[in-house]
Structure formats: structure tokens, C-alpha cells
Image 1 (cartoon, helix red, strand yellow):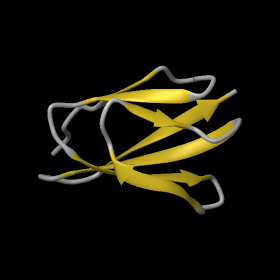
Image 2 (image 1 turned 180 degrees about the vertical axis):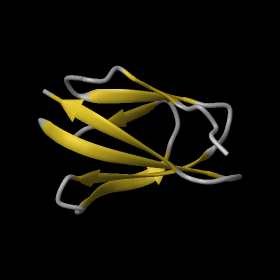
Image 3 (image 1 turned 60 degrees about the vertical axis):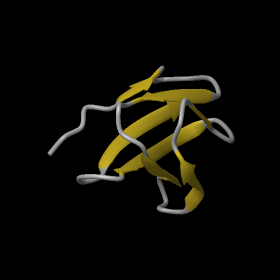
Length: 72
């Protein structure tokens, strides 16, 4: 089941926002698969530097969603 998160802006310069009616956790990975940060998603996630990232969102109910992010 898809929970239709809205992750914006993408591409971004430093941060993304997550719009969702569901609470949950996130994990942010670089493209090499290294875990960069994790936590509880709320309104804002700060990206540490320029590059490409994978953002995994884990709602308290349902399955995870993965979003590709570009920070320039």
C-alpha cells in the first residue's frame, strides 16, 4: 500500500520537507548504501552536503517508501 508521501523540494539546496498524515521513522542513505542519518520524520530533514540520496520512510502502519533526492 502506498501512503502517498509528499517530499519537496526535489532537487533542493539543503533540506526537504515530508508531508504525510502518518507518523513514522526515516533513514537517509548515500548512493553507496551508507546510512547518513535516521530519526522520526516530521516537517524537515536536513541534507548534510551536495549529492544524491535515498530517503526511506517507514510509517507506523504499512510498508516503507523510498524517494530519490538531489541536493545541489
